[in-house]
Length: 250
Image (cartoon, rainbow, N blue to C red):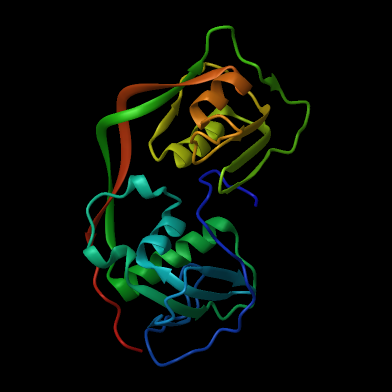
């Protein structure tokens, strides 16, 4: 699974044909879908699927919380106040830009943000709140990572049961900090003072116990990377939901 700068959003790509129903329409524009349909998903499935290809969006079984995470590239712990149904009501969405063209990640996020505003009345703002954070610092003995000889930044990983794995190539340690934040469910700030792109491989047990064969992520960072997650107080970027309502039937 390839990770982005804000990883582990849980997207599973599929191919699906978009359908249209009478609803909210817009003149063709790069930042809004031309036609969209939002319906409740009654399946009870545990899987969410999101696909955006050739100007067509198909989403199955996604909560508003998942949609916001993808639109704003945030982690679960970065949510502020919101409605109780934020992560319990599930939706299917079909939409098209009408252009037949693929979109960039930034264009997709803009399209999704505007769809959420149109159909869910979503209004948000960012706040910086002081609270507990982790600082990523150099551990005693110095770092065990080396600057990369590659020129193509990449990060990928997986997490299943007792097996967690992350590999970074030519990535700044701010990207490592962001990925670690997703794993520990808390903001991680890069305070290593190390610049440039680095290579690293990290293996840990996401659910450590007596039968663990891999270390906890805290021990793994120190033992394998020569870095340390230090508990501190600091700024947390929080997305506050000012308004959101159930979408209209369409």
